Image (cartoon, rainbow, N blue to C red):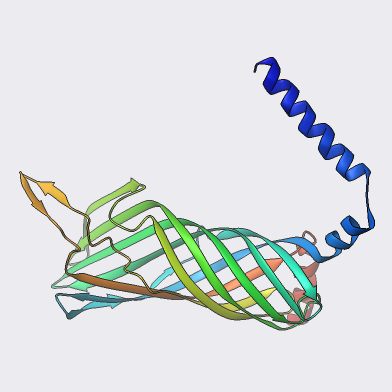
Length: 239
């Protein structure tokens, strides 16, 4: 690290220290409205709507539990209205079945949501939420089964088989102490129709005539930094 970089880093640290030292009334008010929560999607049950050359392709529901985690940052305008954003890691995909062949395809995505909360947003009770999200697909995995036997498996980092960015819309509700239910819909194709591959000198576009949409239902969770206490309270409610 050179001297200029060291001085710049030191200056940033000093400025940050000074910012916290000058604890103004405005900053105190801001921190009362802004807070972080540990949360995201839990178990995900996804469904695909796939067509090849205009004909429906049989699909199967896909259930996954790992790894769906996130961290959100909230801003509450009032006790009844707020917004949030953050970063969330998800495992989403589609399963197709045709002529004895089953294909399981999934992507890991890193998503940034922007949501609106309406209800008891400052308390531990019920509120609605809705919004949109952009996911960045960074790992693609595919498994092929023929008559129940796995015959092929591979994964690719930042694959061209799916779009790099996957927009979506979501809506749901949350109830005490931080568990909720959410539906999320991806209006664009799951597969990249411009993807091409060359096998034995022959170039093909495997997804050119395929239309593939996806949505999923998931149990969401959103806990503050004191989430163990909240879960203990939830456990007492169940007993």
